[in-house]
Length: 388
Image (cartoon, rainbow, N blue to C red):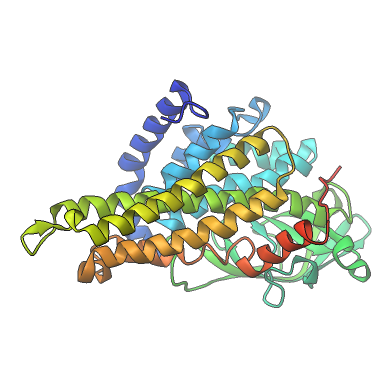
């Protein structure tokens, strides 16, 4: 236990959540990976146990716990070796619900946030577009005010929970002529006329329903606006810092799982009269990997603590995702190699881990975009300010 960040209460939560995942989730993972559909019952069970409400106010059914419960939640989700299931379970509470909580009116919180915490509703966040992935400012989806309604037209893609969710949090341009300063955020029900979704067939994260979504003259009430018009880009940047830290934490946790699995395999696998963990070349490669992962984890914990203290960590979160996902890909590749031919066989879990890891440097802002964000901060002196 890292006593600097985790108390006995934290570790009790870790054990109980780990036990829950092993009992309620792990037996179904292979089926969900095959079908790309996480069955509804587990969402309700997660809600009933309070896992979706870890970071949310008690007023709406949450637990209002400190940020290291959230860190444990992310780390333990990675231990079941299904990036798709993990993604579905953190996109809902920490992307979709985060906007409801931060920018939603009291009416929106009562209608969407409370049932989301309970597991009765599932949400998704729609930012990326077919022609504007990491280029948030380049989005083309529009929201035109007509009386007491907004009319939404456009499309989104690579949306986790994009097919089976009950509501969508959508970024659109209310003032296209203003570029990034013309973006606003909305919430809308899945069954609103004009919304359609197509499931995407992915290399990894196969348990989650990643969709491409089209909006064809979708009419929503004006009160479905989250926050204020034209402040959407600031809202997105504020929450993207959280998403990028999440991806960094996921990466170090996934790396630790892969290393632990590889070590156990190497202790049992005999070659040339001794177990693989006795070969110096392999031992030293593992030592290097463990050192890099530990460095990432330590930085991620420090950044999480600062985020929990309401510091604005755009630079640090970008660094967390950039480096941690890079290391995770390296660990996934090396640990698969330690298993030799068995690493390439689907019955062994390293193949799935390798596929799932590969999304890390892409989702939530590509590594190329993150390098430019970091360069603007450290070279150009650019500052990112919280939305007010």
